[in-house]
Length: 164
Image (cartoon, rainbow, N blue to C red; front, side, top):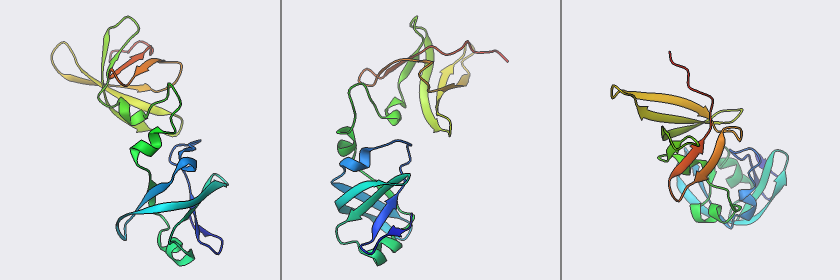
């Protein structure tokens, strides 16, 4: 977003609605089309409108304007400190085996599609003829039974798949 105030705070919108991770940041990495990614020490961060105001060491209003449109990232270890017990990174589901509550394989998570209403898991498996089949399953509480990232396993109870 555009800079805010005379000190050049950056307006930041989180990619994940409701994410509060940035409030815990001590350091961030900004990547823009104008040059290589650069690490900055966080001076302050506070809630602002739909996102946050982020003040960075060595960034004045002119520098903040040059950073407009940059992607703000945090190191995984810093993000992990913000996870509550039972929470996980959705990206960690990629590669997990997926089964139904009875233990029958539904496939493997190939990717996650971040759609406006909710994320969607793209599952792949081989059919009886050895052909790869893809299935899309919304990642919603109604279908999600268990996630065990350490065991690389997800249990889903989605509606029956329709043939066709």
